[in-house]
Image 1 (spheres, helix red, strand yellow):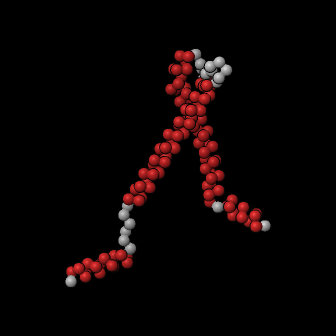
Image 2 (tube, one colour):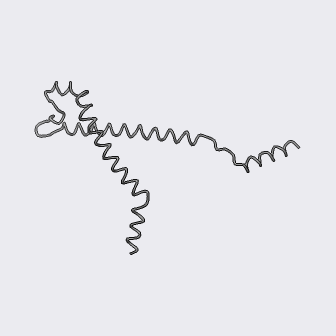
Length: 123
């Protein structure tokens, strides 16, 4: 029974649940990025290049038997994800710096001690 109880405590901890939520959100984000690359970036930005080489879709790019078009699409998806994550982390870090920069208010004890110090200096 000890093992089951330990596992239950481990599984219910916030870290495991947070990780599960992150995986689900990551999968959904991956689908959004795939759609962005496949349905927006590729047709709008790569369409002229693809037409120039005679390919209608990036997946059709081949060199012999090597299908490098899918590899290029994967690289584009990776770059989009990396840029978005960089921007998110940069925004989070900037808010943390603002929170850390704000000076803490002195406690009531500290205020009282400062008043006593100031009175003693006057004498």
